[in-house]
Length: 79
Image (tube, rainbow, N blue to C red; front, side, top):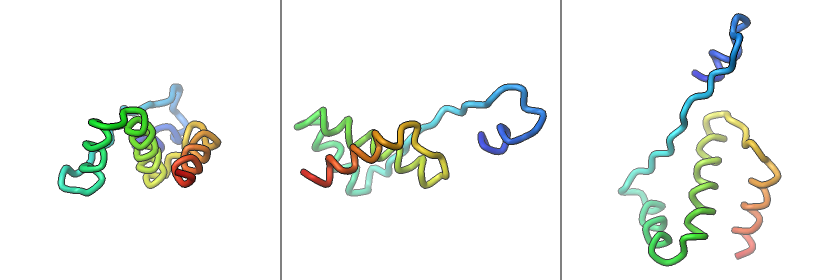
């Protein structure tokens, strides 16, 4: 909806919606995030940020910093 409103010609100001990432507690990724919360908070932060950007990409929203996103993917793949 944000993209639709911002594409209207009469839009004098840009609409910025609050985004929320919801994760199904029955999904295996939720278990992994809970495990990381207990064992490795830095990795939890990285994974959470990647999941958020991935969800935005699926919705058609480009990452604010594509280079940083690519670097994070590369870092995880190298682990």
